[in-house]
Image (cartoon, rainbow, N blue to C red; front, side, top):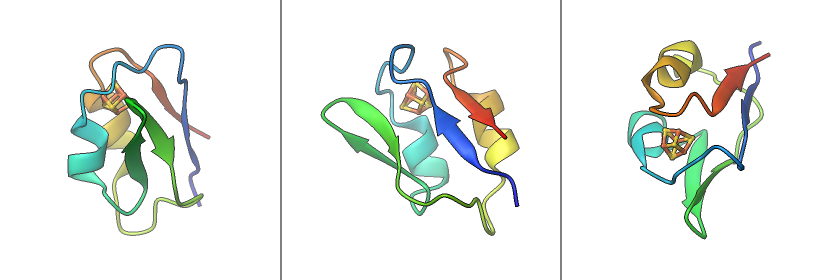
Length: 59
Ligand code: SF4
């Protein structure tokens, strides 16, 4: 299973990842946080490509 990781230093808290995958990403204190270790039904790769500052990587 792919695991998403957010680089908080790059994240600008735009909320795109949260709106696409609310089960995986949640904005806390202006930064995205991974709340589930696994993407599950969510296409994390697509979310990573949607991040405007490339702060999400999928491992
Ligand atoms: S899409 Fe990228 S910049 Fe926007 S909140 Fe998510 S990780 Fe942060």
